[in-house]
Image 1 (cartoon, rainbow, N blue to C red):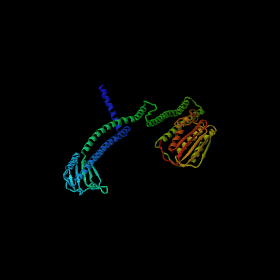
Image 2: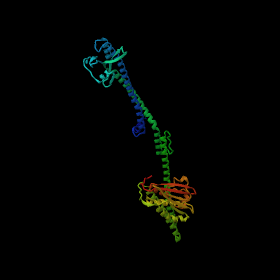
Image 3: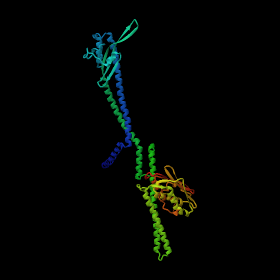
Image 4: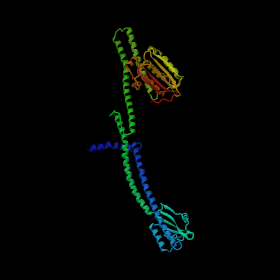
Length: 503
Protein backbone atom coordinates (compact mmCIF):
# COMPACT_ATOMS: atom_id res chain seq x y z
CA UNK A 1 0.00 0.00 0.00
CA UNK A 2 2.79 2.39 0.97
CA UNK A 3 4.79 1.62 -2.17
CA UNK A 4 1.69 2.11 -4.30
CA UNK A 5 1.06 5.43 -2.60
CA UNK A 6 4.68 6.40 -2.99
CA UNK A 7 4.62 5.40 -6.65
CA UNK A 8 1.47 7.44 -7.17
CA UNK A 9 3.17 10.47 -5.61
CA UNK A 10 6.20 10.09 -7.88
CA UNK A 11 4.08 9.77 -10.99
CA UNK A 12 1.53 12.46 -10.19
CA UNK A 13 3.88 15.18 -8.91
CA UNK A 14 5.37 16.02 -12.34
CA UNK A 15 1.87 16.08 -13.79
CA UNK A 16 0.76 18.35 -10.96
CA UNK A 17 3.72 20.67 -11.61
CA UNK A 18 2.96 20.70 -15.34
CA UNK A 19 -0.65 21.53 -14.58
CA UNK A 20 0.40 24.43 -12.35
CA UNK A 21 2.74 25.68 -15.09
CA UNK A 22 -0.07 25.51 -17.63
CA UNK A 23 -2.45 27.39 -15.33
CA UNK A 24 0.07 30.09 -14.38
CA UNK A 25 1.46 30.59 -17.88
CA UNK A 26 0.31 33.89 -19.36
CA UNK A 27 -0.25 32.07 -22.65
CA UNK A 28 -2.83 29.91 -20.90
CA UNK A 29 -6.45 30.76 -21.69
CA UNK A 30 -7.40 29.89 -18.13
CA UNK A 31 -4.66 32.13 -16.69
CA UNK A 32 -5.83 35.06 -18.78
CA UNK A 33 -9.44 34.55 -17.73
CA UNK A 34 -8.29 34.33 -14.12
CA UNK A 35 -6.33 37.59 -14.43
CA UNK A 36 -9.27 39.39 -16.07
CA UNK A 37 -11.79 38.15 -13.48
CA UNK A 38 -9.41 38.90 -10.59
CA UNK A 39 -8.74 42.44 -11.84
CA UNK A 40 -12.46 43.01 -12.41
CA UNK A 41 -13.04 41.94 -8.79
CA UNK A 42 -9.99 43.80 -7.42
CA UNK A 43 -10.80 47.21 -8.85
CA UNK A 44 -14.26 47.50 -7.21
CA UNK A 45 -12.73 46.46 -3.86
CA UNK A 46 -10.09 49.18 -4.05
CA UNK A 47 -12.57 51.77 -5.31
CA UNK A 48 -15.05 50.82 -2.57
CA UNK A 49 -12.44 51.12 0.18
CA UNK A 50 -11.12 54.45 -1.07
CA UNK A 51 -14.65 55.77 -1.59
CA UNK A 52 -15.67 54.84 1.97
CA UNK A 53 -12.58 56.50 3.51
CA UNK A 54 -12.86 59.57 1.30
CA UNK A 55 -16.58 59.94 1.97
CA UNK A 56 -16.14 59.58 5.70
CA UNK A 57 -13.25 62.06 5.80
CA UNK A 58 -15.10 64.63 3.70
CA UNK A 59 -18.25 64.22 5.77
CA UNK A 60 -16.40 64.39 9.11
CA UNK A 61 -14.48 67.53 8.09
CA UNK A 62 -17.68 69.17 6.85
CA UNK A 63 -19.50 68.40 10.11
CA UNK A 64 -16.55 69.64 12.19
CA UNK A 65 -16.34 72.87 10.18
CA UNK A 66 -20.08 73.44 10.51
CA UNK A 67 -20.03 72.83 14.29
CA UNK A 68 -17.06 75.12 14.92
CA UNK A 69 -18.40 77.87 12.64
CA UNK A 70 -21.73 77.91 14.49
CA UNK A 71 -20.02 78.21 17.86
CA UNK A 72 -17.62 80.88 16.55
CA UNK A 73 -20.55 82.96 15.27
CA UNK A 74 -22.16 82.79 18.72
CA UNK A 75 -18.90 83.85 20.38
CA UNK A 76 -18.46 86.63 17.79
CA UNK A 77 -21.84 88.03 18.81
CA UNK A 78 -20.79 87.87 22.46
CA UNK A 79 -17.56 89.75 21.63
CA UNK A 80 -19.62 92.63 20.29
CA UNK A 81 -22.10 92.44 23.14
CA UNK A 82 -19.41 92.56 25.83
CA UNK A 83 -17.27 95.05 23.88
CA UNK A 84 -14.44 92.55 24.05
CA UNK A 85 -12.41 94.19 21.32
CA UNK A 86 -11.82 97.17 23.66
CA UNK A 87 -11.87 95.36 26.98
CA UNK A 88 -10.71 91.76 27.27
CA UNK A 89 -11.56 91.39 30.95
CA UNK A 90 -14.91 89.65 30.36
CA UNK A 91 -14.70 86.35 32.22
CA UNK A 92 -17.70 84.95 30.36
CA UNK A 93 -16.12 85.49 26.96
CA UNK A 94 -12.72 84.24 28.08
CA UNK A 95 -14.34 81.13 29.49
CA UNK A 96 -16.13 80.47 26.19
CA UNK A 97 -12.89 80.89 24.26
CA UNK A 98 -10.99 78.55 26.56
CA UNK A 99 -13.82 76.02 26.46
CA UNK A 100 -13.87 76.06 22.64
CA UNK A 101 -10.09 75.73 22.52
CA UNK A 102 -10.09 72.79 24.91
CA UNK A 103 -13.11 71.10 23.32
CA UNK A 104 -11.55 70.92 19.84
CA UNK A 105 -7.91 70.90 20.95
CA UNK A 106 -7.43 74.06 18.99
CA UNK A 107 -6.36 77.68 19.13
CA UNK A 108 -8.43 80.85 18.91
CA UNK A 109 -6.91 84.20 17.96
CA UNK A 110 -8.93 87.44 18.04
CA UNK A 111 -7.75 90.28 15.82
CA UNK A 112 -9.09 93.85 16.13
CA UNK A 113 -9.57 96.36 13.35
CA UNK A 114 -5.92 97.38 13.45
CA UNK A 115 -4.78 93.81 12.63
CA UNK A 116 -3.51 93.47 16.18
CA UNK A 117 -3.91 90.27 18.17
CA UNK A 118 -5.81 91.04 21.34
CA UNK A 119 -6.45 87.46 22.42
CA UNK A 120 -4.59 84.16 21.89
CA UNK A 121 -5.77 81.08 23.77
CA UNK A 122 -2.17 79.85 23.55
CA UNK A 123 -1.02 83.20 25.02
CA UNK A 124 2.05 83.52 22.80
CA UNK A 125 1.04 86.06 20.12
CA UNK A 126 -0.90 88.75 22.05
CA UNK A 127 0.11 92.26 20.97
CA UNK A 128 1.53 91.14 17.62
CA UNK A 129 0.16 92.24 14.28
CA UNK A 130 -1.00 89.71 11.72
CA UNK A 131 -1.68 90.44 8.08
CA UNK A 132 -2.58 87.63 5.70
CA UNK A 133 -4.77 87.13 2.69
CA UNK A 134 -7.38 85.21 4.68
CA UNK A 135 -7.54 87.94 7.37
CA UNK A 136 -7.84 90.74 4.82
CA UNK A 137 -10.61 88.87 2.94
CA UNK A 138 -12.37 88.22 6.24
CA UNK A 139 -12.40 91.98 7.02
CA UNK A 140 -14.27 92.30 3.75
CA UNK A 141 -16.92 89.91 5.10
CA UNK A 142 -15.72 86.67 3.49
CA UNK A 143 -15.39 83.47 5.54
CA UNK A 144 -12.42 81.24 4.78
CA UNK A 145 -11.85 77.59 5.63
CA UNK A 146 -8.72 75.56 4.94
CA UNK A 147 -8.13 71.89 5.72
CA UNK A 148 -4.49 70.91 6.17
CA UNK A 149 -4.54 67.10 6.05
CA UNK A 150 -0.77 66.69 6.38
CA UNK A 151 -0.57 68.70 9.63
CA UNK A 152 -3.97 67.59 10.93
CA UNK A 153 -5.92 70.81 11.50
CA UNK A 154 -8.69 72.99 10.10
CA UNK A 155 -8.10 76.73 9.88
CA UNK A 156 -11.10 79.07 9.78
CA UNK A 157 -11.58 82.84 9.75
CA UNK A 158 -14.85 84.32 11.04
CA UNK A 159 -15.62 88.07 10.85
CA UNK A 160 -16.73 89.85 14.05
CA UNK A 161 -19.66 91.87 12.78
CA UNK A 162 -21.45 94.73 14.56
CA UNK A 163 -24.92 95.60 13.30
CA UNK A 164 -25.77 99.34 13.68
CA UNK A 165 -29.40 100.40 13.37
CA UNK A 166 -30.40 103.81 12.00
CA UNK A 167 -33.73 104.53 13.70
CA UNK A 168 -34.24 107.68 11.67
CA UNK A 169 -33.89 106.00 8.27
CA UNK A 170 -34.98 102.58 9.49
CA UNK A 171 -31.89 100.83 8.12
CA UNK A 172 -29.26 98.56 9.57
CA UNK A 173 -25.56 98.61 8.71
CA UNK A 174 -23.11 95.73 9.28
CA UNK A 175 -19.53 96.67 10.09
CA UNK A 176 -16.63 94.17 10.51
CA UNK A 177 -14.90 95.13 13.76
CA UNK A 178 -12.45 92.25 13.91
CA UNK A 179 -11.60 88.69 12.92
CA UNK A 180 -11.54 85.38 14.75
CA UNK A 181 -8.74 83.12 13.43
CA UNK A 182 -9.27 79.57 14.65
CA UNK A 183 -7.26 76.37 14.24
CA UNK A 184 -9.08 73.12 15.12
CA UNK A 185 -7.25 69.80 15.43
CA UNK A 186 -8.54 66.81 13.47
CA UNK A 187 -6.80 64.13 15.53
CA UNK A 188 -10.04 62.37 16.43
CA UNK A 189 -11.05 62.30 12.77
CA UNK A 190 -7.64 60.89 11.80
CA UNK A 191 -7.85 58.22 14.51
CA UNK A 192 -11.35 57.23 13.41
CA UNK A 193 -10.15 57.27 9.81
CA UNK A 194 -7.27 54.93 10.66
CA UNK A 195 -9.59 52.54 12.47
CA UNK A 196 -12.03 52.64 9.58
CA UNK A 197 -9.15 52.13 7.12
CA UNK A 198 -7.92 49.03 8.95
CA UNK A 199 -11.46 47.66 9.06
CA UNK A 200 -11.90 48.41 5.35
CA UNK A 201 -8.55 46.74 4.65
CA UNK A 202 -9.61 43.59 6.47
CA UNK A 203 -12.88 43.57 4.56
CA UNK A 204 -11.00 44.20 1.30
CA UNK A 205 -8.59 41.33 1.95
CA UNK A 206 -11.53 39.02 2.69
CA UNK A 207 -13.23 40.15 -0.51
CA UNK A 208 -10.00 39.64 -2.49
CA UNK A 209 -9.69 36.10 -1.15
CA UNK A 210 -13.27 35.46 -2.20
CA UNK A 211 -12.58 37.05 -5.60
CA UNK A 212 -9.44 34.90 -5.97
CA UNK A 213 -11.36 31.72 -5.26
CA UNK A 214 -14.22 32.73 -7.55
CA UNK A 215 -11.73 33.69 -10.27
CA UNK A 216 -10.07 30.27 -10.01
CA UNK A 217 -13.41 28.46 -10.15
CA UNK A 218 -14.80 30.71 -12.87
CA UNK A 219 -11.67 30.47 -15.06
CA UNK A 220 -11.63 26.69 -14.62
CA UNK A 221 -15.29 26.48 -15.55
CA UNK A 222 -14.82 28.66 -18.65
CA UNK A 223 -11.70 26.79 -19.75
CA UNK A 224 -13.24 23.34 -19.22
CA UNK A 225 -14.83 23.08 -22.70
CA UNK A 226 -11.44 23.82 -24.28
CA UNK A 227 -9.90 21.09 -22.14
CA UNK A 228 -12.61 18.79 -23.47
CA UNK A 229 -11.56 19.69 -27.00
CA UNK A 230 -7.91 18.98 -26.15
CA UNK A 231 -8.75 15.63 -24.54
CA UNK A 232 -10.93 14.62 -27.46
CA UNK A 233 -8.18 15.54 -29.95
CA UNK A 234 -5.64 13.58 -27.90
CA UNK A 235 -7.92 10.54 -27.98
CA UNK A 236 -8.16 10.80 -31.74
CA UNK A 237 -4.38 11.30 -31.98
CA UNK A 238 -3.74 8.27 -29.78
CA UNK A 239 -6.08 6.15 -31.87
CA UNK A 240 -8.64 5.53 -29.13
CA UNK A 241 -11.45 7.11 -31.10
CA UNK A 242 -12.24 7.90 -34.71
CA UNK A 243 -15.63 9.51 -34.16
CA UNK A 244 -16.37 13.14 -34.99
CA UNK A 245 -15.81 15.50 -32.07
CA UNK A 246 -18.69 17.38 -30.45
CA UNK A 247 -18.20 20.05 -27.76
CA UNK A 248 -21.25 22.34 -28.02
CA UNK A 249 -20.55 24.32 -24.81
CA UNK A 250 -19.59 27.53 -26.66
CA UNK A 251 -19.88 28.82 -30.17
CA UNK A 252 -16.09 29.06 -30.21
CA UNK A 253 -15.65 25.40 -29.28
CA UNK A 254 -18.25 24.45 -31.89
CA UNK A 255 -16.24 26.33 -34.53
CA UNK A 256 -12.96 24.77 -33.39
CA UNK A 257 -14.44 21.28 -33.35
CA UNK A 258 -16.13 21.83 -36.69
CA UNK A 259 -12.83 22.94 -38.23
CA UNK A 260 -11.01 19.99 -36.63
CA UNK A 261 -13.62 17.53 -37.91
CA UNK A 262 -13.14 18.92 -41.40
CA UNK A 263 -9.37 18.57 -41.09
CA UNK A 264 -9.83 15.07 -39.66
CA UNK A 265 -12.08 14.13 -42.55
CA UNK A 266 -9.55 15.53 -44.98
CA UNK A 267 -6.75 13.58 -43.30
CA UNK A 268 -8.78 10.38 -43.48
CA UNK A 269 -9.46 11.03 -47.13
CA UNK A 270 -5.76 11.63 -47.73
CA UNK A 271 -4.87 8.48 -45.82
CA UNK A 272 -7.40 6.50 -47.81
CA UNK A 273 -6.06 8.04 -51.01
CA UNK A 274 -2.53 7.17 -49.93
CA UNK A 275 -3.53 3.55 -49.39
CA UNK A 276 -5.32 3.47 -52.71
CA UNK A 277 -2.33 5.17 -54.33
CA UNK A 278 0.08 2.54 -52.99
CA UNK A 279 -2.27 -0.22 -54.11
CA UNK A 280 -2.71 1.33 -57.55
CA UNK A 281 1.01 1.95 -57.99
CA UNK A 282 1.71 -1.66 -57.05
CA UNK A 283 -0.93 -2.85 -59.50
CA UNK A 284 0.17 -0.54 -62.32
CA UNK A 285 3.81 -1.51 -61.94
CA UNK A 286 3.19 -5.20 -61.35
CA UNK A 287 0.78 -5.78 -64.22
CA UNK A 288 3.27 -5.05 -67.06
CA UNK A 289 5.99 -7.05 -65.28
CA UNK A 290 3.61 -9.99 -64.93
CA UNK A 291 2.70 -9.78 -68.59
CA UNK A 292 6.35 -9.56 -69.62
CA UNK A 293 7.19 -12.55 -67.43
CA UNK A 294 4.38 -14.67 -68.90
CA UNK A 295 5.33 -13.75 -72.45
CA UNK A 296 9.01 -14.47 -71.83
CA UNK A 297 8.25 -17.80 -70.11
CA UNK A 298 6.01 -18.80 -73.01
CA UNK A 299 8.86 -18.19 -75.43
CA UNK A 300 11.32 -20.10 -73.28
CA UNK A 301 9.00 -23.09 -72.93
CA UNK A 302 8.69 -23.52 -76.70
CA UNK A 303 11.30 -24.90 -79.01
CA UNK A 304 11.64 -23.64 -82.53
CA UNK A 305 9.28 -20.71 -82.03
CA UNK A 306 7.97 -19.43 -85.40
CA UNK A 307 9.39 -16.08 -86.33
CA UNK A 308 5.94 -14.53 -86.64
CA UNK A 309 4.94 -15.65 -83.12
CA UNK A 310 8.32 -14.63 -81.71
CA UNK A 311 7.93 -11.19 -83.29
CA UNK A 312 4.37 -10.84 -81.94
CA UNK A 313 5.45 -11.76 -78.41
CA UNK A 314 8.35 -9.33 -78.55
CA UNK A 315 6.04 -6.54 -79.72
CA UNK A 316 3.80 -7.28 -76.76
CA UNK A 317 6.80 -7.20 -74.41
CA UNK A 318 7.91 -3.85 -75.85
CA UNK A 319 4.37 -2.52 -75.38
CA UNK A 320 4.34 -3.58 -71.73
CA UNK A 321 7.79 -2.05 -71.21
CA UNK A 322 6.56 1.21 -72.77
CA UNK A 323 3.56 1.10 -70.50
CA UNK A 324 5.82 0.57 -67.46
CA UNK A 325 8.06 3.41 -68.62
CA UNK A 326 5.06 5.73 -68.99
CA UNK A 327 3.83 4.99 -65.45
CA UNK A 328 7.29 5.50 -63.97
CA UNK A 329 7.76 8.71 -65.96
CA UNK A 330 4.46 10.13 -64.76
CA UNK A 331 5.27 9.14 -61.17
CA UNK A 332 8.63 10.88 -61.38
CA UNK A 333 6.93 13.95 -62.83
CA UNK A 334 4.50 14.01 -59.91
CA UNK A 335 7.36 13.68 -57.42
CA UNK A 336 9.09 16.68 -58.99
CA UNK A 337 5.87 18.72 -58.94
CA UNK A 338 5.21 17.78 -55.31
CA UNK A 339 8.49 19.20 -54.07
CA UNK A 340 7.95 22.39 -52.06
CA UNK A 341 11.04 23.92 -53.70
CA UNK A 342 9.88 23.13 -57.23
CA UNK A 343 10.62 26.05 -59.50
CA UNK A 344 9.15 27.23 -62.77
CA UNK A 345 11.18 28.50 -65.68
CA UNK A 346 8.93 31.48 -66.30
CA UNK A 347 9.06 33.68 -69.37
CA UNK A 348 6.65 35.61 -71.60
CA UNK A 349 4.85 33.31 -74.03
CA UNK A 350 1.91 33.51 -76.40
CA UNK A 351 -0.81 31.28 -74.94
CA UNK A 352 -2.49 31.17 -78.39
CA UNK A 353 0.61 29.60 -79.95
CA UNK A 354 0.97 27.08 -77.12
CA UNK A 355 -2.62 25.84 -77.52
CA UNK A 356 -2.37 25.75 -81.32
CA UNK A 357 0.75 23.56 -81.12
CA UNK A 358 -0.96 21.21 -78.65
CA UNK A 359 -4.06 20.79 -80.80
CA UNK A 360 -1.94 20.23 -83.90
CA UNK A 361 -0.09 17.36 -82.17
CA UNK A 362 -3.34 15.80 -80.93
CA UNK A 363 -5.18 15.89 -84.26
CA UNK A 364 -4.06 12.33 -85.24
CA UNK A 365 -5.42 10.94 -81.94
CA UNK A 366 -8.72 12.80 -82.40
CA UNK A 367 -9.13 11.46 -85.99
CA UNK A 368 -9.06 7.87 -84.74
CA UNK A 369 -12.58 8.37 -83.28
CA UNK A 370 -13.61 11.21 -85.58
CA UNK A 371 -13.37 13.89 -82.85
CA UNK A 372 -13.46 17.49 -84.04
CA UNK A 373 -10.97 19.85 -82.38
CA UNK A 374 -12.04 23.50 -82.33
CA UNK A 375 -9.98 26.43 -80.97
CA UNK A 376 -11.63 29.79 -80.32
CA UNK A 377 -9.71 32.80 -79.05
CA UNK A 378 -11.26 36.14 -78.16
CA UNK A 379 -7.90 37.92 -78.39
CA UNK A 380 -4.16 37.42 -78.41
CA UNK A 381 -2.98 36.49 -74.91
CA UNK A 382 0.57 36.78 -73.61
CA UNK A 383 1.45 35.65 -70.08
CA UNK A 384 4.38 34.76 -67.84
CA UNK A 385 4.36 30.94 -67.68
CA UNK A 386 6.56 27.85 -67.75
CA UNK A 387 5.97 26.85 -71.35
CA UNK A 388 7.07 23.21 -70.96
CA UNK A 389 5.00 22.46 -67.86
CA UNK A 390 1.94 24.40 -69.03
CA UNK A 391 2.06 22.55 -72.35
CA UNK A 392 2.03 19.27 -70.43
CA UNK A 393 -0.97 20.41 -68.36
CA UNK A 394 -3.04 21.61 -71.33
CA UNK A 395 -2.12 18.47 -73.26
CA UNK A 396 -3.48 16.29 -70.46
CA UNK A 397 -6.75 18.24 -70.28
CA UNK A 398 -7.32 18.11 -74.05
CA UNK A 399 -6.15 14.47 -74.36
CA UNK A 400 -8.58 13.44 -71.63
CA UNK A 401 -11.37 15.30 -73.44
CA UNK A 402 -10.55 13.29 -76.56
CA UNK A 403 -10.18 9.90 -74.85
CA UNK A 404 -13.40 10.13 -72.83
CA UNK A 405 -15.43 11.56 -75.69
CA UNK A 406 -18.03 9.89 -77.82
CA UNK A 407 -17.39 8.84 -81.37
CA UNK A 408 -17.97 11.69 -83.85
CA UNK A 409 -17.92 14.14 -80.91
CA UNK A 410 -16.07 17.42 -80.51
CA UNK A 411 -13.65 19.20 -78.21
CA UNK A 412 -13.84 23.00 -77.94
CA UNK A 413 -10.90 24.93 -76.47
CA UNK A 414 -11.71 28.56 -75.67
CA UNK A 415 -9.15 31.22 -74.68
CA UNK A 416 -9.95 34.59 -73.13
CA UNK A 417 -8.47 37.02 -70.59
CA UNK A 418 -9.13 40.09 -68.49
CA UNK A 419 -6.70 42.57 -66.94
CA UNK A 420 -5.49 40.00 -64.35
CA UNK A 421 -5.98 36.40 -65.56
CA UNK A 422 -6.32 34.35 -68.69
CA UNK A 423 -8.88 31.55 -68.91
CA UNK A 424 -8.77 28.34 -70.93
CA UNK A 425 -11.94 26.25 -71.22
CA UNK A 426 -11.73 22.68 -72.47
CA UNK A 427 -15.24 21.37 -73.30
CA UNK A 428 -16.11 17.95 -74.68
CA UNK A 429 -19.24 16.08 -75.69
CA UNK A 430 -18.20 12.93 -73.89
CA UNK A 431 -19.51 10.56 -71.24
CA UNK A 432 -19.43 13.12 -68.42
CA UNK A 433 -18.40 12.80 -64.78
CA UNK A 434 -20.80 12.22 -61.87
CA UNK A 435 -20.91 15.09 -59.37
CA UNK A 436 -19.86 12.90 -56.45
CA UNK A 437 -16.56 12.23 -58.24
CA UNK A 438 -15.62 15.92 -58.71
CA UNK A 439 -13.44 15.99 -55.59
CA UNK A 440 -11.60 12.77 -56.47
CA UNK A 441 -10.78 13.06 -60.15
CA UNK A 442 -7.45 14.72 -59.32
CA UNK A 443 -6.38 11.82 -57.10
CA UNK A 444 -3.61 9.69 -58.49
CA UNK A 445 -4.77 6.59 -60.38
CA UNK A 446 -8.40 7.44 -59.63
CA UNK A 447 -10.76 6.50 -62.44
CA UNK A 448 -14.51 7.16 -62.51
CA UNK A 449 -15.18 4.15 -64.73
CA UNK A 450 -12.30 1.73 -64.21
CA UNK A 451 -13.42 -0.72 -66.89
CA UNK A 452 -13.83 1.97 -69.54
CA UNK A 453 -10.57 3.63 -68.49
CA UNK A 454 -8.68 0.35 -68.86
CA UNK A 455 -9.91 0.08 -72.46
CA UNK A 456 -8.83 3.66 -73.15
CA UNK A 457 -5.45 3.27 -71.51
CA UNK A 458 -3.36 5.85 -69.68
CA UNK A 459 -1.92 5.85 -66.19
CA UNK A 460 -4.61 7.75 -64.31
CA UNK A 461 -2.06 10.42 -63.36
CA UNK A 462 -2.77 12.97 -66.08
CA UNK A 463 -5.26 15.18 -64.22
CA UNK A 464 -3.19 15.07 -61.01
CA UNK A 465 -0.14 16.29 -62.95
CA UNK A 466 -2.14 18.94 -64.81
CA UNK A 467 -3.75 20.35 -61.66
CA UNK A 468 -0.41 20.50 -59.83
CA UNK A 469 1.09 22.50 -62.69
CA UNK A 470 -1.83 24.94 -62.65
CA UNK A 471 -1.47 25.37 -58.88
CA UNK A 472 2.25 26.07 -59.32
CA UNK A 473 1.23 28.96 -61.58
CA UNK A 474 -1.10 30.16 -58.75
CA UNK A 475 -4.08 29.23 -60.88
CA UNK A 476 -7.33 27.35 -60.33
CA UNK A 477 -9.21 24.51 -62.03
CA UNK A 478 -13.01 24.34 -62.03
CA UNK A 479 -15.19 21.59 -63.46
CA UNK A 480 -18.71 21.40 -64.82
CA UNK A 481 -20.08 18.10 -66.08
CA UNK A 482 -23.28 16.26 -66.92
CA UNK A 483 -23.48 12.55 -67.55
CA UNK A 484 -23.82 11.60 -71.24
CA UNK A 485 -23.68 15.32 -72.17
CA UNK A 486 -20.10 16.40 -71.61
CA UNK A 487 -17.52 18.00 -69.34
CA UNK A 488 -15.92 21.45 -69.19
CA UNK A 489 -12.66 22.17 -67.39
CA UNK A 490 -12.02 25.89 -66.74
CA UNK A 491 -8.38 26.76 -66.07
CA UNK A 492 -7.67 30.27 -64.75
CA UNK A 493 -4.06 31.48 -64.45
CA UNK A 494 -2.65 34.96 -63.65
CA UNK A 495 -1.12 36.84 -66.56
CA UNK A 496 1.81 37.89 -64.37
CA UNK A 497 3.59 35.20 -62.36
CA UNK A 498 3.61 36.00 -58.62
CA UNK A 499 5.56 33.02 -57.26
CA UNK A 500 4.61 29.50 -56.23
CA UNK A 501 3.14 28.77 -52.84
CA UNK A 502 2.63 25.12 -52.00
CA UNK A 503 -0.99 24.33 -51.10
